[in-house]
Image: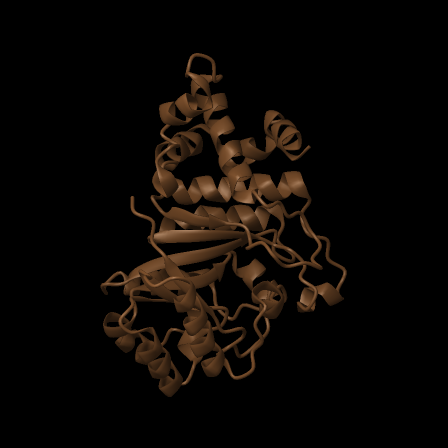
Length: 314
């Protein structure tokens, strides 16, 4: 599959009406929330100077659908003629915005974070799982692709709440997904309270289970973990976090399917055998097999998995 080059434009907190407990867009992106139209234009100019050809433009970092209509139109004009990808909060998508979708937007990414109503409320999200499910069904009526962004290890998210969220994945229909493990960023409200993010083993096991559940529903996971280049955070972070997740998924596949990796002509042969060598969609079959072999509770009780994760993280 030909690589797509997406020109990223960050609009920190643009359109946001409240501050989620985990959010510090300026630390993540390096951009401030001041004069974001001018900032967007500058970013586009800088990226086009680095590369002459782009396949798509993406507006990230804020709540796009809550921007004033005049600002949204200005951004569409800046993006032309490139296809547009936007990220927004599920509760921000109203009838007015939906009327714009087919004409102006190619991909909508929803900052879902969780499908547990309790976890959402604890993290300052102003919607429920039913809102997300209903919105995705409505968007399926349009010629627009959808993506869902999840977080693992949210503030107050117990295993029971995480389980509740994962079980509702069967009710959603989306094309793509991103998984971000929760970190405490320096400027986020959560940095001011007594909260300890997940340690390595629990973080990776939760992210891997979510990765498996999404792939089993044919929702392609296009990114795992936050981007590199920021500092001052607390919590488990690894520059190859996504590769660790995929490795754990492969290992679980062998545990429940083939029992080992002997006889598969090395690592690449093993990946080919279980169908995990085909890009972002290559884990669909192995994920379906794992979901059929493991229950949620069995996943977290299989002592071989945390031992394997500890070896990976050494």
